[in-house]
Image: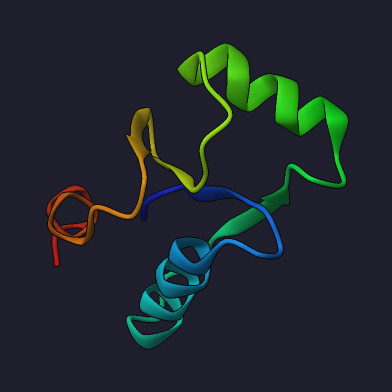
Amino acid sequence: MHTVAIYTTPTCHFCQMAKAFFKENNIAYEEYNVAADPAKRQEMIDYTGQLGVPVIRVDDNLIIGFNQPKVKELLGL
């Protein structure tokens, strides 16, 4: 089983698309709203060096933006 997390903001269209993709594929994930959680925002910046969302973490792999083919590859879909 994979560990999946997504760093989001409430107004991010691509974040909504990524979460819908996870739901459609029954992928459990942890969501971090970086607009409301300064510690998670800083964690995301430390990981990526930027403020852009979504940032998706699959196990130890980071994906900046919603790159569906890469997410599928990492999840074995």
